[in-house]
Length: 110
Length: 111
Image (cartoon, rainbow over all chains, first blue to last red; front, top):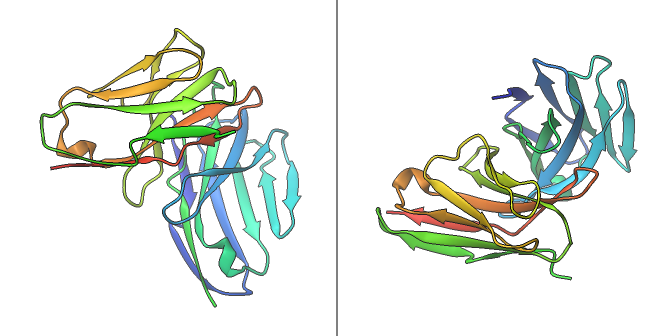
């Protein structure tokens, strides 16, 4: 199957610090999505990136899609305790089948 | 609108028992999916249904069967449960733009 590497696996930050998670694919992607899962909850869609080099912002969250469409990142500026959860990338190779990265678990200390 | 609902929320089975996990959506989406999530791991696709009347295997289909009963409902059946099937099971639907909406999950423990 398709492989995607997501790093880091865990990140512990002090509230107010920044956070970044990276998603890398060995093959070119069609699109990529990002999801957030709160502890004990279900994944919730955050955003979809489509174009090479695309950058999208949602308040303190910045999403980037690499120029070669093989990697993506999610950056959170000035983390808050409400950012706690696991962030998953979901690269799209085929619009019927979806694969998820292993996720980055973010813990924010107040 | 309820979105995506799953029943049951929790289930404990003994090895060899069978059960069906139910999923229903009121979002009028054509595509539906079943995933499993093991502790500390990402989601792995078990089966999906691109439209009513069709189903296809995902990454980890062994030990499972599915039925797309109608546009609203997509069920997942474990014929003979094994401890390796202990997991959280999520159902999801997909919009035309590929956004997925997940149900709350079913937590399954197989002893």
